[in-house]
View (cartoon, helix red, strand yellow):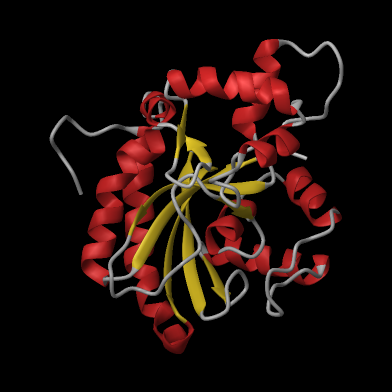
Length: 257
């Protein structure tokens, strides 16, 4: 359950954080009852704290009465430093302009990938990633690109856990996945075929700074066009190298790709 349990003696701060932490990509809108249940905060306490959070605009309320994260938190979130997104965004725009395909940028957070930026068009294939969303590492192109360049101890630990299987094509056998990660390291990019979502395939490249993966850049196409993925690798690698160079040695103000 998000946000912890109903243990006695919790501070007001911990209860507020539990309420805010109850929202996630799968639960962006919640009723008060759902919010109390997911946060582990008693309904009467949740009602009182939600009122304060609404007045501060940390939470908003839709016409149907469901609660959502408010604009004040979004505003504060924009202040969080994110060098990868700052230096990577022009390269995402350049890659989208040259390919017309959905592109996204992700970082590793724990055992998941966190999508920090995305550029897409109306005619590109719909994808599940969105800015601020989290997905498992092994079924996604960006996740494989990151995982392949993590320290050996981390990879062993990751492969030792029970691996999610979003589609029948997801590789969950530890030995097979380890061999694929070795191939990713050798060639410098990852390919996935309907492992995260049926109907879409992806290519992804790590953004390496001093040999360390600080992010991964991915591009997604429809499964019907899977044979086109190889031609997208070169511009993908070029953009990932551009982001890495900008991350290590930031360009002068006003310059771009």
